[in-house]
Image (cartoon, rainbow, N blue to C red; front, side, top):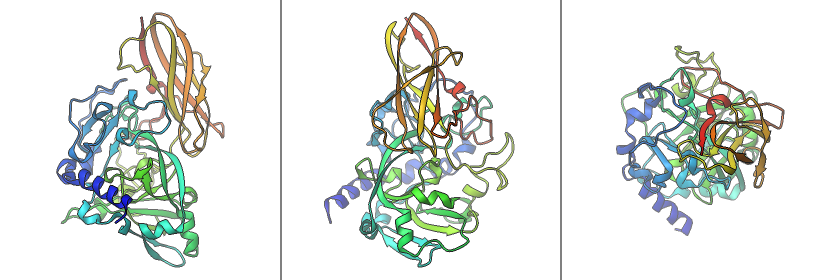
Length: 410
């Protein structure tokens, strides 16, 4: 067994010993249904909850534990180095992860490829012989920003911390499909199926993590086995995860065991009725838009409204901006709640259109109260919206008005 496999096994063993106990099936299956509605606030109050055992390796001071399966990165913990450290990356799991015993040697984990000219199954070891790509993408929970919706939708009251920018390594889905003779004619969707253990005695379609996205998403998709230079931790979908750049996190299937090209969307509840943009008070159904691609979005990371008052004088206002399916072209910052805007400077290297860009604005602030807002524009000219429409699930809140922060300068 090589060093990479040993490292992966150690990580799997330390993060899965109590995954079922801490994840708990009820909150994992219906977090959006079981969380009590509470007033949305403009700042997040860190909960005094310890990290669950399966993610005990996370930086506790950088995280907000909402539930054992919903853990947020604090606004002040994103840093200024573009990539989000693995020990600060948020957690959102729909089902308990498979155990280390089930996975065995990570290199032996297999994924089946269907809906192609020559269907085949590959182990990770075999995938590593086909090709290698490295790509930075924004990983963002569909509910990031839910806590800012005025309608108080049920579910975890995420502020800005259910997101991160991650460097993935793996093989291009496009290369795998080309080797198998291409996608079968007439297929419309790419459907990924997760390898979580399903509870017994209920319809698998009611709980299985299986998502369909438009076939076009295949072009830049990746079967990844490495995250930020290390084997993907079990808590984040290792040993193998489907990465769909520009798409919300739920479509980036963890523990992927099946990748199929299909004529129809999956009938799994998480696709058929879940993660739909339903009008407030209505249940999800297939006629409503699916939660797929991300929209242009940005937020301030410093000054932190949860921190101490800012000293008057020279201040660097910083934040992050993402473009969804397109690159970030520019970011503007307002000190007066959107009445006037100033161009911010994009900071650091450009890691590709699917990564986020960090930005900074040098300001000389006098004593007083400020409402600091930011908005981004992507490479196609699409501007971040001022407000996002309310929906039952509290998904896709990208409005710059609700994401503005209020700070006091003394």
